[in-house]
Image (cartoon, rainbow over all chains, first blue to last red; front, side, top):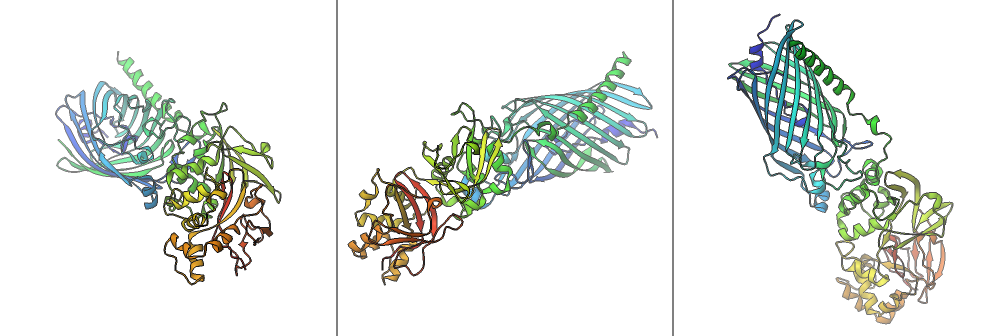
Length: 293
Length: 333
């Protein structure tokens, strides 16, 4: 089955913006002048936390944490080779600390606000016809920086902080192989330099999926390994400043997109952690609507 | 040139597959690591009140890290479990009845510098706590080892930054003498609501404050709580609305009654772990009769009590004695 990859590229933007647990960059390029705007809403929650050496079954202080977000995501093809991607999430985290615990510690059960805006440029270095398909080599470079004035230094209150207040510079190398049948595989590896004591991190993602003009679907496994100069929560060096913690994870999930009419489409996905270090064992889902032009 | 990209692309794909697969976060990579003392409290459901107390008292961060005040970098913590806190009516939702500085000091009293393994603990020995060096003492009773009045029910839980032993009662030390300790309660420095207010008023009225402040003594004191005095007033046909109302009682009588709340033996104070059923001479003319030792407490009775008093806060260590707060005033015949 020969499909129109350019049309497909124009439809795919997929930003499952369930935080940083999935690469913000898709492996697909938009053609010059094409773009998309996507709005998603997501929800995830956790009561288990990956601590070292053991997972604990209740979030300290807050017992259970729910994170909801509304994210705006836009992608535009400056040229066939150069795309820009902008995203901005608004996040609300809600804990379930008891009234007594809140009163004793002066804590609150909710934090919300605009989190970090990210701007990426991605450049298709080379496209190559190979093995009954197409191989794209893409390089991406982006910066992510806090937009809202949210706090991260409120001691254990910051267990439910909406972000790390760090400015990250991330470089990604992406290889996207699409078979003419519509099946594709995308591998990404990258490195993220982070401020505000947040450990730098090696990130990687592998995605397998099927993309046709009527439907898109993928499954992925995403991984982050933080520099070991980060500290463990409640471990040596921990001062209650959560951005400095060493956050590692392996997350799996699935994404889907269905074009509806006149450039509009619906997207949805689910994801969960299978292993982690210093983060909540959350499971989440998102849905959204997008418009392509 | 094309081949370079092709190889690069295939290499990159392989690389990402390998990275994703092999760098997967895996608990086995740190299963040999030991949890910190704070982590043990957080990880164990039996310590959820201690966890909340440590967070509330501001010591969770301290007990996450190595001890800067000891060459070994270690702490030893005698950790009260949830049942221990529950004896005082304390759990995660009620900890707020305590003043935070008192809570912090109480936690520090459970901590000492360096490792103190159970093999190094011997009856009649003592151990200096992290609360200004106030010492705790070890007691052997019925084949079990106690620290003060608290039974050590599990030993030698090894943490990255020290050792944890589990105890069945919260240990309390005030750092003041018997009178100062009662005043601390009365002035709401311990609980946010005043306690022992009537007792403090009565001690002042009876002019016993100086005697009970004697730094050379080692008193064993049974301290009736406020409700005990209010009930006494009712029994005497009086209405006690405020502590000053104890002055309705004849001063000499009240003095005699108060002296019946202190063991005549003032050279050796006693935790519950050191007390047995029987009659003991009081500083006053009466005797104090203790019931059978039962799960860390004993009942207490004066000659005139129709039913024995219960200990509501046993084993409060002061600098010149041990105070057991009870729920009735001990009465002479």
